[in-house]
Image (cartoon, rainbow, N blue to C red; front, top):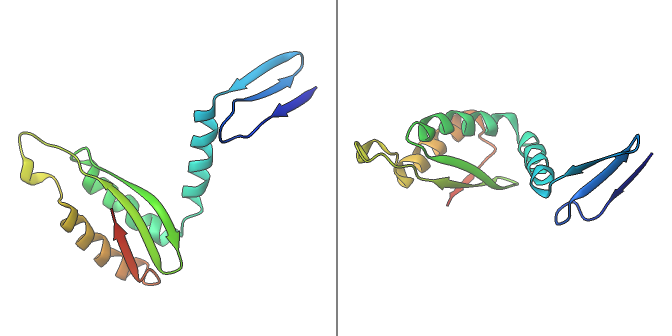
Length: 116
């Protein structure tokens, strides 16, 4: 039984167990690392992001954490699209206002929101 791997961020990982080989793709490893990073976010901040994701997701938009540092949260907003109701899609300014207000209530330790 042996294990071998190279840089998990750039190379596939190969694990050998009981005479068989299990190949893991880079994408799966990176996805797991991304999930681990997301789970380490402050629960209050995650609550705000989850609630806002429901709002922007209803029009095929999404939110992605870029960075969390002391007192500052950086989030990327990928605006959705609705051809039948373009005014239903939350604007960048609207999402920023809603997130700022929600962070003040649920995560007051976040003093600054950078919405990209």
